[in-house]
Length: 188
Image 1 (cartoon, rainbow, N blue to C red):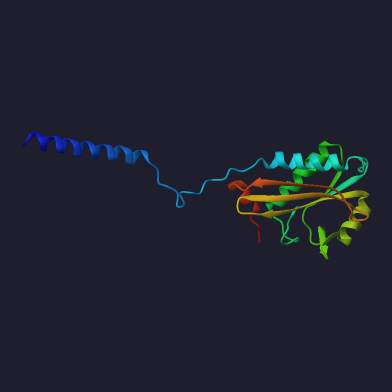
Image 2 (cartoon, helix red, strand yellow):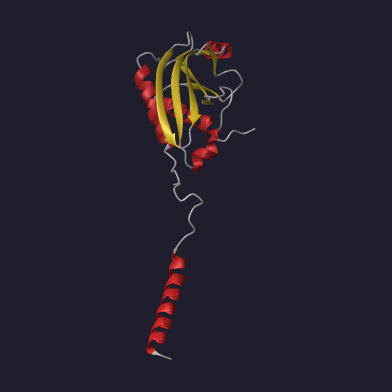
């Protein structure tokens, strides 16, 4: 066997060995190599910050001795549909307003208690107005959300229970990671 044949065999063996070692170090590429995982946002922190934003806008008009109603946040495309996301976000707003010294009455999603759309305007349903009177509530905290490809967009409002006037409004956006995506699934 000639020296050049031996060198060639050694080189081939080295390349094969390196290929095996490097193959063990690589991972299987994702089905879409351009896709990146989206991390979830801080849902609690964002909800509390948004609640504080609402409070700062409406604090002079709100009486801490009168109750507030809190409705589940709903899907903007179907105001009678919510999800775990809509329910937990409304609960987080309720938590923050409780910490701010308000008494709250929660209305986890019941039919026809959110707001109705009429000619582009959102009006509190008759049932919300009646509940407001029964509980002496001055206002209702409501919200909508819209799901995008990588984000969920949330709008929260404080609505005057007597005349449906918007007392405060706050918009924010959260990235849709795996936890948020799971919370956004609607249950049948």
